[in-house]
Amino acid sequence: MENKTGKYLKYAIGEIVLVVIGILIALQINQWNENRKENNALKILTENLNNEFQKNLKELEIDLSRVKNTITASTTLLSYTGLKNVEVNNNIIDSLIYFAISNPTWNPSSYVLNDIKNSGKLSTLKNENLKLLFYDWDRLYEDILEWHAGSTTNTNRLVYFVGEKGSLVNIDNYNKKNEKDTKFEIENKDLLQEIRFENELENSLYSLIELEKRYHKASVLLNKIIELSNTDDSTK
Image (cartoon, rainbow, N blue to C red; front, top):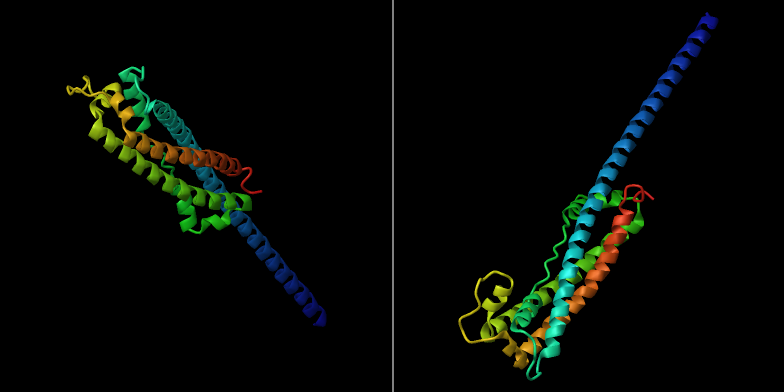
């Protein structure tokens, strides 16, 4: 009887051990599946971030080129203001003013990053350096927005003055928006003798130069984010 009881206990203990082992294996498999799902979600997240910032960088490069052209045109115009008998063709002056009154248009996408921050998924990123770059990006972007607004205000003041004292029609004609020049006897070259034109142009130029500096900082920062948000680097 005792022998049978001993065998039964051994059998029962063996069954319990097998059940426990089975449970542990099941838990391990479940954890592995959860980790796999988490890693796949993290991979998709970082790929989306990378794509968003690559797009932002391309658009930044386009607008940076536009800003440089505007700075060059404004600087050239300022070299003529106040001079008597400026021997420059009216069409050239119209073209320079056309570029000088061009507003920056860069408006980077932040949909993916905002979605990640609002959903609390930012904490799932394993690369701490990447997280710090996102904080730097937020601060820099706020700064860029402020200079964007200032630049737009100054450019609008310049456009308003040109509309008062010069011919916007002639400027549009340079850009092929109008087929003919104004019928009024007015030339935008005369604006070069207006002190207010010089002052408004200088204010606009100052804002653009400061904005260009921040664009260059943004380019460096975006490249770093793109590099670290590659799926192979984001988990380091």
